[in-house]
Figure (tube, rainbow, N blue to C red):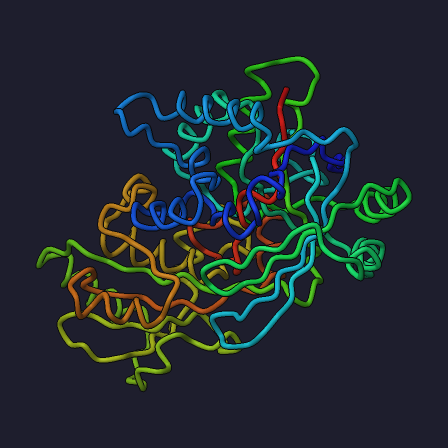
Length: 420
């Protein structure tokens, strides 16, 4: 079982920074240059100054992060709490499907350990570059700045039942992000409540939803320092698998750089393996309840919205004989195996480094990629159910990158976990 305990929290002092609105940010990996500048325009104390550091003088960005982190602690911008606590969070949001939801969960420290049954499992493959960056940042600040988002089984919702009374009180702080998600944060230090929450999930394993690079960085850092201590724990946001506000959305595949030969190989594979039907443009993203393996498809040559339905699962079984059944049923795994690797000849390294491949979380943006030349072919995916995510992880497999899009993101800057 995963081991969970309250945080020895470092947090912003609201009397100094004014509000969490001004200093929180999305996860580092969705922030580009203009967004970073926009966040710092809200406040020079915004967390991107340390979580996505830049030295305007051309110096070491990680040394810059270390200097700013230490200065903020010394100046009282950040404060270390004396008493351990967990932090309840609600997120009121409008999802990409246009519906309104509220997701519930809490921040805590989780003991770093190897992946394995009954403890902590990943669900997607990762890339090497972000892990190196996050490790350098962790070495510099000796803190977890951005939380990992993990799921736990609690089908009686006992953990949130223990936390919910606290949310009747005024929150410690609120932050509204650029998507309009309203994040409300409560500090929970009552030992009885903490015991009830940690006890409710004591026998369950954790499934990482978002933040695989950060968790693998935490493992490397813990081994690097060695021995026992705060460095053996990592900051996580924990949400129940049965939470009514937990939603997963798809990430569409954008293919580019096609030679004449690859273009012909792609068309031949589609004709050989799939039943093809013309559809209205608004149906390019398949509904989640459509049976079988299905994709929406649009290319720069024909510009005709189509539905691709896998005609026979035999080629998948033949291509993936060593993979468990839940993996072979994944739309993303079938597309990667039969089309990206099979027809287009992409290697695992090509996919990991996005050579000829990109992603879009927005159906309109994916359609526009054909018009503006960012893509020559787009495969529109449907959402993967939470249960399928669990089954693949339980089988010991990791999904292809960007198989899931958990929305909304967990903001950076609400709480921090010191590692010394």
